[in-house]
Image (cartoon, rainbow over all chains, first blue to last red; front, top):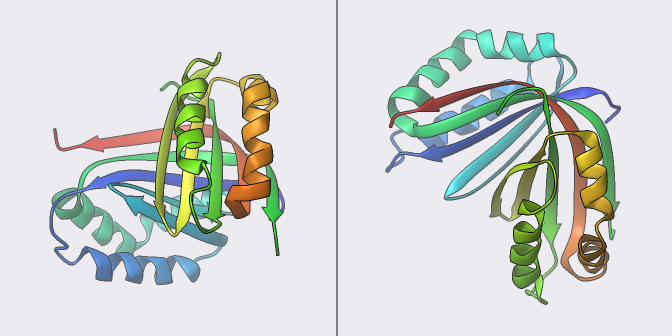
Length: 101
Length: 101
């Protein structure tokens, strides 16, 4: 990707049980892909969860945050799914890639 | 943490087998904590690995990258541990935190 672009680092710890989380997470990942300025998504969890989404601009991030379906997911996240989270909005200044392929 | 500060997002896929990786990863995490400007570290893996380290300035990141022991670890990473990685240097513009505690 051509820098600069933007990243949202979403670090979190889950509550116990699924409570509809996995289905909604998959749905939100699919919905994010259709949004203007979406560049990509990466996610990993082993206890701590770290998800990073990438966007062309801060405006794209603001628009995605305000998306109606996403807002409902955010509300359920606070109510049911996360015991803690931290969201960081970042400007990606440089990047390096290595591949053995 | 007080914004702005800096984040290094290190996304990677591992080769098979440990090959000394876990011990070196733990050692580098301890060493990073002693470096000037170090603010924190978060890591998760399930197939894809995502590690994020946080720093006060770009200069701190450059210095950590050039650290002799860290450079040896980077060389082993390319030789033995990673089949792919991407490193993104980011400026953290804003952050939000939520906690049920």
